[in-house]
Length: 376
Image (tube, rainbow, N blue to C red; front, side, top):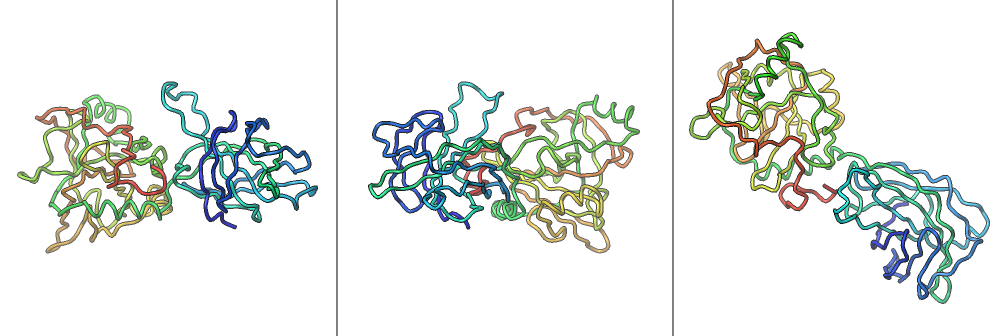
């Protein structure tokens, strides 16, 4: 049975609690810590007979919900009226010690049949490690509670965005994509040493590598999908790629039809910004039936290559014609190796604008344009 509401966040169980919250039935209570300590006016009494939850199981994990169940001794089980669930983000040993710590969340639910669904984007983030512990409680006629000892602490990690969540991002990105501009080539900027290495060690073929952690925290492609990054943006006045780049002074250009054609599938990967006015859309091009295609088919919304708001491939008079969205910056990931002889490598005449790099860039969690209500 799903908990209809999880009303409030409380203090950490590792320190005496100080505030009154409302539970799912809007009854005022206070909670003690995992060691059983409580303030003098807490309104909670101790009763050893209440069973302590054990053998806790976490299942059906999504980016903003999970199901929890446990076992209990039969003794006094029928006296249980509520469950107290203590949920905390797992401590990151590499985190900045001066950063404000996340407030732990203590959830209060009526004693419903197990497993019980815990859901809430205001305290659960995607792809995040948490710890959870449980108490059983019994409300008395005078409004006080008797509670069990805390259970053992269990660790789990929330999931990535699902296709449903990515479709919500997709719909937000469509709103600001703007009109379509014609283009003819995909391009990839790198340092000269990169192309020298490809020639010497990979037989002239650029190899896919694992995508970094830039973009939405819940993106299912970050740290998992292997691909090669390309751009396709053009300058409005020339219709050609810009001469500046944040990624290196040497540019590989390849005719668009070599990568994007009827034998490839197109997927929406992400939508984000980096505390700036302009936004990025990540698209994935995967040859039909390739490992990358199978990966994306299971996790990402597929786009109609001929008709979408971001990147299209259509046929006019027997020739493939390509268009890209004007008002977002497209980041294209191609999932197969690409041979250098299929295109050209040349030095650009512009500048290397490092400030525009999106390598491991973190998404602005406060932007209303590119965030959805399932964490960041």
